[in-house]
Image (cartoon, rainbow, N blue to C red; front, side, top):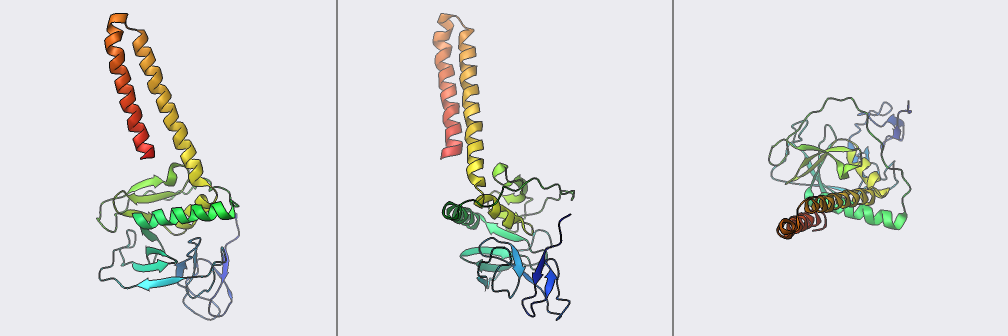
Length: 242
């Protein structure tokens, strides 16, 4: 079993467990905030991330209406973390990212990976035995879908296809590690291979159907088959490449 992660109290410097809510030495409350680089949770008041060393840049944003955390049903705090707008739950430390913010995070981390190289390994399966619980979107209140991010990250996140994605504590950090390790390139390669298999299946079906007809029939049906296969091929291409 891995040793429990320890961090330092930003007030007195004493070592404390990463899941502590109060310093045993000085009694300071240990609220958690997200690192603007790796999105690991660090103690509020810390100047640098204890995971990646990045400077902590976080600004709370005032809003007229506060969306509720889908798990705790408490009002979430709007924050600007680095240059990304997110919502944080002060209780469970989950993070809500709207569609535009998540796209920005993915693009920025891919650029970082291209410059810095891929030092981390891809995340492995999470064998958590926690029961599955579907949670509502903070914006439309409809139950979200549970999705394996990028189909191969092994990080299950809650997604509203219209409004955004919910990350439980540390899930966004794991996604960032996945991206920096080249995970999105791997996901694209897998999807391209799947699409190629579908194209080959369409071609095989077209050849098989045409070979079973006589010339007079095939002269008619082959054109229909080619048209259907071509249309299906265009649909597949538009699904992935548009």
